[in-house]
Length: 456
Image 1 (spheres, rainbow, N blue to C red):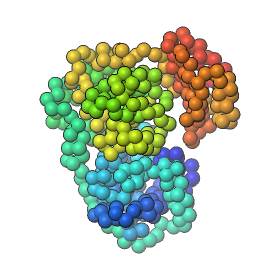
Image 2: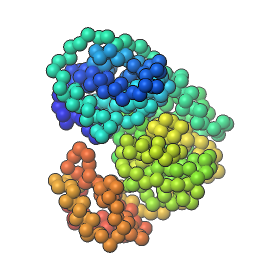
Image 3: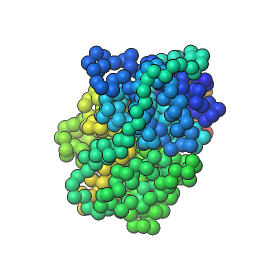
């Protein structure tokens, strides 16, 4: 087994070179040994406390990998509830709905078709990352010498589509007005779940790349501007109210307005702030530290409490739980909800956007325009061997600003700010800059590039 497949938040690699059925069996066995050990006495009394949910995405090798994973789990005596081909957020729902001690989704998210992997969740769908158990699972799996073992656990198949649909649509306001939207499923799981959940609503959905062909028409990553080309063109050609593009496992999405302009994911967070704080005044809203100044400004303006957090779903979800925040947004396109078990959901995000646009008396572009008051670089990557040394250099160079080390180094000035943070898995530094003018933004990008080198 290649130890490189174990990442900060999940397990991922090329099939079958890095991940194959033997690896899946070992990872299943290791996960089943680790997760139940975390249960407390009162939780052991639940009907499915001795079970794990297993789901998979639409990749051509996901079914075979899931089958081997299930056998590995069963070899420990732990039962499996096989919930079939699902979007990743349905896994979070299933763990809580069925009361299992956790679950594993077979997916490689937005990676190319040759990749596969595993997203592991614990009790109540809490994330299992490198600091919360994934390192333990890696150690157990790497120590296994064979994939033999008597199958003592059981397997039950469950189709949770109806229950999941009811859960998602309970957030939909009654009597939403008819809307027309373009949805690019990126040949991923949104192609199955969007029709299943939203098929009977007064919403006309223009479907793009809904088929599961084993290939992706474009990279299933909605953060890459090039991947939004098709949905932008469709929105304008079909006169849609807005458009969305999902990633491969449908837990992330990006939005474009009726004119085909991208709505940044931090601007989506800002757009949802008044909507949520009207529901529950004075609530906390969590945002990741790469987000625009506009996010914290909107939270304060609408009477909420902003909570700035490190990048990564494990940190955002913990912050939501710790502060009982009503929702949270991340620049990556993950949006998290207290009433969805503090977990992220692309489908529930679509519901809330439908509510907001349905209630609005103006077009989406007019809703968003007041939020476009700063100029952002987007995330720029630099190949750097000694990441910490470079970040220390930046902290010293800009020490006259307000310096913060929550995640990498962040420095604020009155008219611009930047965050430079390290990749968890690659020799890369990731830079985000925002300024009050385009000229200042361009100048500061050039200035910091002199310290970090050419972008990659």
